[in-house]
Image (cartoon, rainbow, N blue to C red; front, side, top):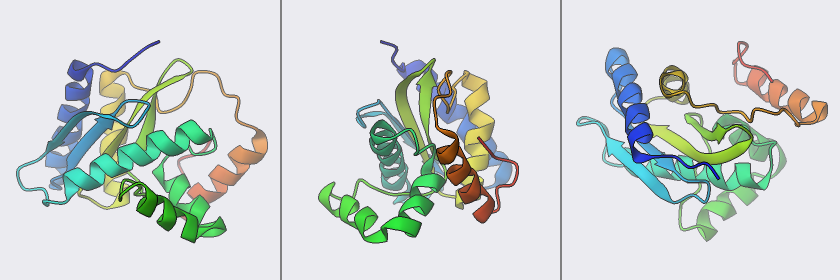
Length: 174
């Protein structure tokens, strides 16, 4: 069983903060293990006081929903899937997890081969800005946000790609 190390989490956070600095957007970044337990959490000096809690909740949400279904490839998909199908369920999930559920962009699972080894969340910018930071940081540490073996049914891919188009992410697709 693969697992994330604090050292690689620190490298990811450093890369996120580097990009955030370039963008002029102070953020917080959280990384959790596959069960949703925190590994690392940091907040830039000028980031809002609530950003660490939001980043941690995004990471927890990603771990929880991705472990439930491979259909949940990132926070934007979770957000729009529930918005279209059952928005009350997402609100209820937040309540019964004591506020640990936040569905938004800027969070994704982390894979080692086909094994989900954790998830991260970034908070402080818009969903799009948080996504840009994660897209910049992932390759710097060699993390993948998708499993090595693609077993997702075409129907699910079509649904996810439709969500990406709805939110204006025409460069992202499965």
